[in-house]
Image (cartoon, rainbow, N blue to C red; front, side):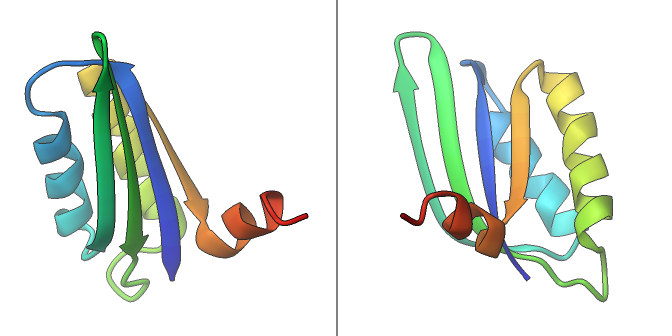
Length: 89
């Protein structure tokens, strides 16, 4: 299952590493990644493929919620089809 993950928060060391480790522990693959720093704000968008046999969408979402709390950032995960539908006109 393809998903879009967005991360937003105050820049600090280890954000990319923590999100990547959490995804790897769930068996997810990062297909594409874009990140930028705007002043002191960190922004990252990832396109991932979840291995639903290892961890379903809800399990990955819960794992990322824990990372978000630990890092003090906002992490949002959306199914790619829902994401595409939201922005289709």
